[in-house]
Amino acid sequence: QKEVEQNSGPLSVPEGAIASLNCTYSDRGSQSFFWYRQYSGKSPELIMSIYSNGDKEDGRFTAQLNKASQYVSLLIRDSQPSDSATYLCAVNINSGGSNYKLTFGKGTLLTVNP
Amino acid sequence: EAGVTQFPSHSVIEKGQTVTLRCDPISGHDNLYWYRRVMGKEIKFLLHFVKESKQDESGMPNNRFLAERTGGTYSTLKVQPAELEDSGVYFCASSPRTSGSGQYFGPGTRLTVT
Image (tube, rainbow over all chains, first blue to last red; front, side, top):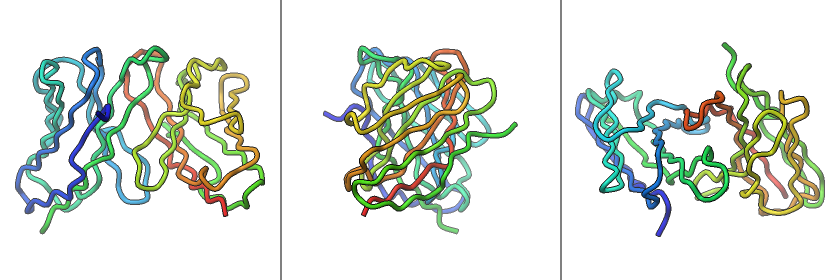
């Protein structure tokens, strides 16, 4: 079982719709969860962090965390063509070493169609 | 505030040669990380510095890789001798002292070993 799993997509949504991106993780002890956006050929850009169960909203973005079910999701409301990118889920997984290191999923490619 | 910078942006070397990558973290960030993404795979952790000390180097592939962070400022990652499988994008990231805080990525160095 992979430590962090995401659907690779591509996920295609029309402009103005809600895009829903999902991520599951294997380590129940994980405490910190992050969503990164990566445009083609660019570096990952931190867009959301979440640490507690429930929802966290920031502008058009909402991160949702359910530790009991070991999943974290990202909702993008009013999707824009500029949101088209790969979205990476990253988790601090405690594996005996540093609890700072991030474990990434492979990412979900989102395309927002005008 | 300047972000994480990396140099060079792209390096093409022959198998057996040596390459040194440099990373300048965000000013004041004690934590510095190196990650790598090989084609088709997820971003993988290599190592973590806290100031000048290596906190976790569990992700380093083998002893051909050497990372340093003299004086707790910039860091270098040297690959000697390079092998074909070392090709990929090497990202550096930094974060403040607080455990579990988000990490900010640099633009990456694309390394091609021929």
